[in-house]
Image (tube, rainbow over all chains, first blue to last red; front, side, top):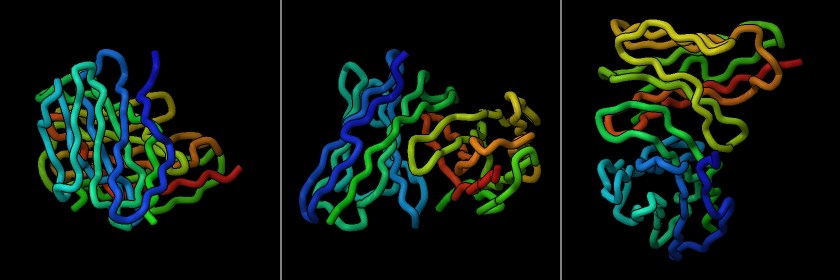
Length: 115
Length: 110
């Protein structure tokens, strides 16, 4: 069974640019969540999608957005990149939806460096 | 702000010893999960313990939960060098929104 796939693995962007990251969840998983990990702030929740609908959103500016497609694949976009957006972005997929708590399976992450 | 706070922040032990990591949280939980992360890579799920459970085991791992003290602990017995990693606890809110603590960096020396 294939795991969670995130692409690309590494990315270098310039301040002011925008970036799109992709996540393919485990087959059959309909919930996809995104997290940002930095040395200073640790792991922080960005947003969660279930059946193409955003159900939860973390405390991040509107420059961070995402979407989920009908095949459950998800993308997140960051516009007008800032140096502070440099981080490891992690995607996680889960089998069940709201009200059920199950384990989350994480991808290897996308390492974004903003210069 | 981070919901779960791990203690200690760093732990160094010899192979064969036991490692204990603690996690405290501030508000009520549905469940609490423990994850391992190797060298800035993806997170690996270890154990999920529900609020009505007090203890769970998985191989060399034992997790306890004390809801009255709002705390959990992860015990790794007979540690191995391969256990070297960062360990995180995460409060699980309904809707698959995990709130992570700062993590414990465990180093197991051969």
